[in-house]
Image (cartoon, rainbow, N blue to C red; front, side, top):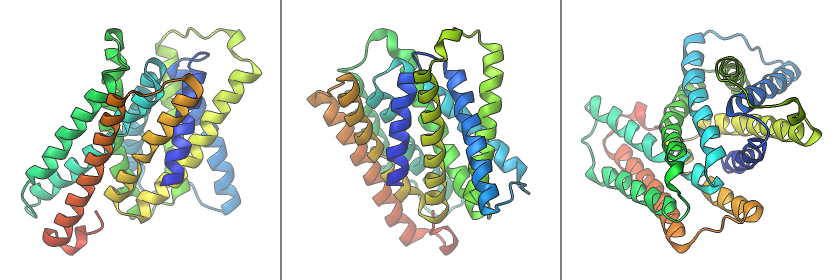
Length: 294
């Protein structure tokens, strides 16, 4: 999971650089196409069949995941890198809330007010992060980044379900990449492109290839982590991407966070870890044995 977060952070850096040459739809399509080719080659080499008996689950995961991805890429293009990554990686808090809500609906536990408090603290952290780096005209990108985090939480839970249904990591990533290619291509046909032929330079192609390669390997690592590990432990480790992205943004763009932003990031990380601890404690005490892996 730590390897996946590092590669996703590097992908975010490449997306921000590539957004100067391509639209979000073009980046999504390029990322997906590179992923399809790479995963198909790996699957052929490892003799992993790509045919699935769960097309509906893959379609749902692909739809939600690609929507989150498109919103995130668009947010990256208009926000500082660390801010966009922070909003997207609030998915850990959303997952904690979704899982607890599911447990309540099943009658396995009561709603823990402490967990709700961690969600509120997370929102306070987001507000502190945005205060020193946000401008009034950046609110559309901020809302897109926040929505990407909610949808990413749903997508991660679906990845867990696919893994536990017996789908190998390469197959899960292949169909997600295929969905990204199709969605990106469709958006390119709907939204007028501002990309000119001169955008296809060696540098821009290298950036697009880097987006696809880092994203594909990160997806494989992330899928393996959610398949074999505990959901909220992985979700809390996902917050390490905030640190990686902050360092990359500082190094590449001089986006040095002030003390208020640093406090906000610390609150979000603390909220994620606290939510994980509360959920783990509650699971071990109250949930049936078949839910312990959640």
